[in-house]
Length: 616
Image 1 (cartoon, one colour):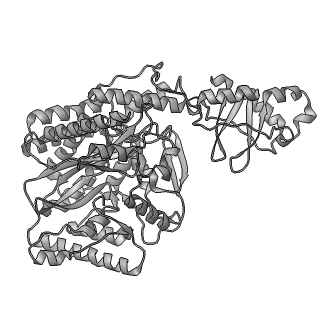
Image 2 (cartoon, rainbow, N blue to C red):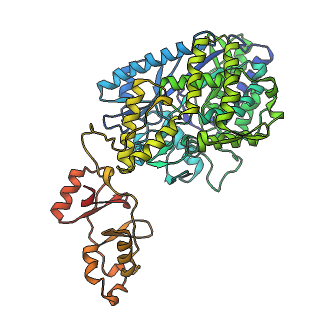
């Protein structure tokens, strides 16, 4: 999609022309498979690296286009969020030291980007979800100002006819209504590509589906979003909901989300996967197409199947079938989209080697996996892994088995076998797969982040803890040691190199509030029970309409008649408030000049927190 100038499908002629091109592309792909034109060897690997841009305060930095322009390298491209970029690596033939070559190219290109970013006081971070992201970052103002993102956003939001209703429940719970696809910009991944022999594509694709849960469980790295501890790999839940074209009560023919694990095992040929996508998901955008792909084949030319690739780019299967042309030869590959970015380059290469090894080292007993395993078992395993990571119990071979046991006893030996058989350097195999083994026995990225975030919350408010966590994540990432070797943070770890503290750093979000018709007796007792001195009064929209303080109420604490009166008769209606992004210095000054001891914190007229003199 990034290579094309796209426009929204709107009139009948555009839709008709696009469907015609799609059908021609499917016919052309069938013809290439039938004539044996699809490349069968050598097998190649490739990858796409998405990464975050952060400022010196370890928050999202919205300067991706400026950084990209100065990098001036075709390997780099934009992402939907103006604080993210993507790096596309070259394909490497699967043999000998190919993973070291891929790692070296990735490191070299990231270093190039780091030097450019540093000039703009920006850092590069590899992480599935940036811990310091706020809801302010996902506004449409932070969408990269490029046509295809605006077109996609408009097409999806028009298709839904209502806001995105995000609900993710983990240890904490996130409920959020949002009006754009910018939630997709919270996710950064390390997308891995493996070329597949056309004759084995369906069997290999089904195997890729079957192993997704166990592979993901040891690679999780995205447990925190907006200060809330959610899934081990929150990206899976978030992405599924963030580009869903289905309205909650208006699904029509689209019974699956556009982000999907699928609904059954695949059968037939690879074109049946594309046919299923076209049948299930309506086209959202189109582009300009000059040549008929079937006519090109008849003239001896190899078509790029642009219409099919564009449609495929708007259907986000976690294992995605892909068609491509390299050096004039067409090929097929599986794109693994569920692995998060980070926490280090070494960890990412280890993840890739583990996945490729298990794909290639499949035992004969797992051939025709669709006949031996119920699809819903594979699907359940995937979502359980996303939720629980290494704590998952998988249903495998008809029995429940721990993630630790399945990986160590069966999948790792399978990966060694597959990589050795492919001729990959034993030195590389042992170096990187040892990282997976160590991670199983020590901790994954999500386990390290959760453990240390909880530690920091003992002495810091959530956003300050997220900022400190991100700083330490960056510091350890720069040293390059794999996640399994990372030490834990001390409870007194602080962030010393930020220029200013914000209200968001110190405000209390766990606040008690009352309604105007509640009794003063209730308010007085809540204050006593919870040892609080200020009580906001809100309406049904959670907008603040008044404030009560202990100073005012203590004078009537023994007056039974007054205590029976409603809150509205006693509350202060003229309220001085703060914004979460105000500096602490500004908030303190506002309290001082107004001779008050607290400031309710407001976002879009709604109460989201409170800051008092005690918080200083």
